Image (cartoon, rainbow, N blue to C red):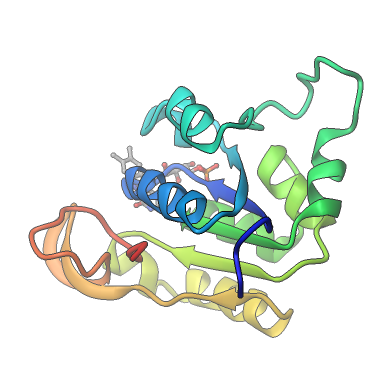
Length: 178
Ligand SMILES: Cc1cc2nc3c(=O)[nH]c(=O)nc-3n(C[C@H](O)[C@H](O)[C@H](O)COP(=O)(O)O)c2cc1C
């Protein structure tokens, strides 16, 4: 996909790989995309909202009910999105999305998008291989979303296994942005 001037929604959830989303954002911006970041509450425990706001040059959507201009931000963002990427996608958010829940800014916005959606799971190997997580990923894939499978490597929880970001010596779990 040609990214110049495209509207990308970048969903960041509360996994150790949240810091990788900063680099992904930088690359999307470098490619000319207009990026709006949506963070879960847990994501903000890993990386500060300000970092995403400054690098995206856009306000971050995190609180569904905090709206300064009375617009319905999550619907507006969903309607103009050309692509939504969830990176990293936690087991929790994957489960919510598979169930069609809408209990925060990210899950609510993603229920309203009609553009392609890419899900980048990122977690400990045992979590990733858990039958419930796999079942939820299958549901999302069968429903038409794209799943970017993680690679194997050194995990934050130490042993090697699927879920790693592929970067040598890294200590988080999931995809890699480049
Ligand atoms: C240090 C730490 C690291 C975590 N890393 C991950 C992770 O890589 N993947 C994951 O699915 N959950 C991880 N979790 C658990 C999530 O933060 C937790 O399930 C949370 O509810 C996710 O919320 P969210 O999906 O709304 O962002 C981690 C928790 C802690 C305390």
